[in-house]
Length: 205
Image (tube, rainbow, N blue to C red; front, side, top):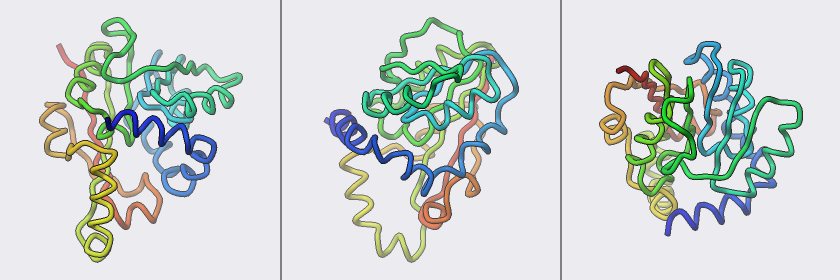
């Protein structure tokens, strides 16, 4: 199953993930905060070692980080210390929270790893308060020389770990979300390969 492969992979690289994160992704975190106002509670789904969770703590009184990889969670917990961030094991498709309890939910670079992204989105919407904000992003391979050279290799890797979710399917699942293409919140290497598609959904009655 894809989920088992994903868990094994992230458990294995958890010791080195923060270095990978800095080299490839670090640019994204502070810019993601632009979508949020100062509020009470936030949930970071597929939080990894907690980089986005700790950024959210700058805008929210209390932040929960949830991940299915215990290796990644252990690294996040070690980094937490005095921060108002609480890490816990779980999957985005079965969130262990009551309805409408978060002002914001994020799922960064992970939604296409979920076996059932539609169910995960439904759960994310369920735990959002009225007028709460959900931010999800998705990397899509850009057209160009690198796609021609590396395309088959990257597609092979993608089939092993990811679902066939693309930005059009995700937009349909989210419904009423705003779609942005952002190249400033990923590192230069990734931005030469991928478009970073960010979806911002605000829950309304």
